[in-house]
Length: 298
Image (cartoon, rainbow, N blue to C red):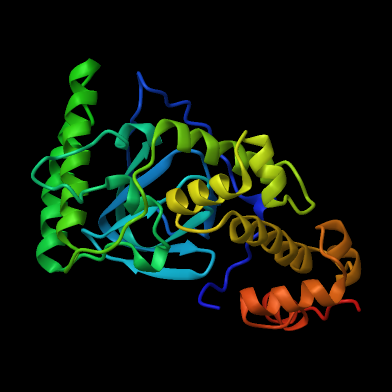
């Protein structure tokens, strides 16, 4: 497992940005004054960030990356993610983005440019920048620092232009065309959001049939929409959510695996054991000993 941090969904901050069609974009400019312990959050809005100076580690549930000045990071809808400042002085620029903002972004010259797809790719497959592209990102960051202090509608328009330039730089970073997730629509975004909220509201297994019915679709149609929009199946998403909570329970309690399995909707301890090993690459007991220093109850 690449990520050695303790993930527990209940302990992840869930900020509310209250973005909408009239106010679809926000920018924060932060100068971090001290190195930090890892912090985690997840939110409805997609996120694009720039490391302007210093260095930091970014964490996803199965990936850890180190960023240097000019690097960017991306987070999808309701995607758990974290960071830790590792070198000062450290300055960051962060865009929380209302997902619908990117749905209608089209350039006739670039028919395969689908910016929302950047936010649905698995973290390991997201764009990586070379030295020249990082320098371009830093030039954009300088313009953004000036825009940050503007006010009114002009500020939002300027931020939107710079966001599109950032996304075009990411597009240019791809060495060759690749198959991307289907272009999302307001309808599919709302469907995905409803299904994800349904998962978060339940500790037991949410089946594809139940989620499809809740969203007013057939099972086949729902599965197709979810997979094409997010880049993963609904089953895999719901399973990852429950397993992340199991991992947190192992680290923060002495409950036996049998009780944890029953609480999180697995058939029995053996069923949970098998899926945990497949997802995390280690036994539940080894996970607990390695990351909490304790031996799990049987």
